[in-house]
Image (cartoon, rainbow, N blue to C red; front, side):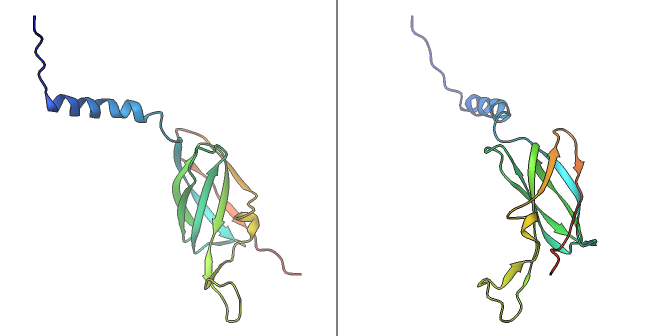
Length: 136
């Protein structure tokens, strides 16, 4: 008895598309939508960026733009570190080598003290009131 092997090209393609969502469900870190405000010394931050970094090494950092003190982006689910950056042109004679400097204190970016607990399944609001370092 001989079995016939018939090839249906459309079936293979359809199977790939049907199974892809099942495979992708487990891939990548879970995220949810977050929004809020960022102010510096009581005034809305004109422009900048906000980054949410999850503690899980597999979680990709998520960054959003800050405009007129407001932001909206996705963030990894769980306990996250929050970093805020905003740049301005350097003054003449200031030696940074890049033409701009981050005027947000390090305790809010490179050495951030900001954190948030992001919960899955619902949009959340996180507001951050930053303070400039006092000159002595």
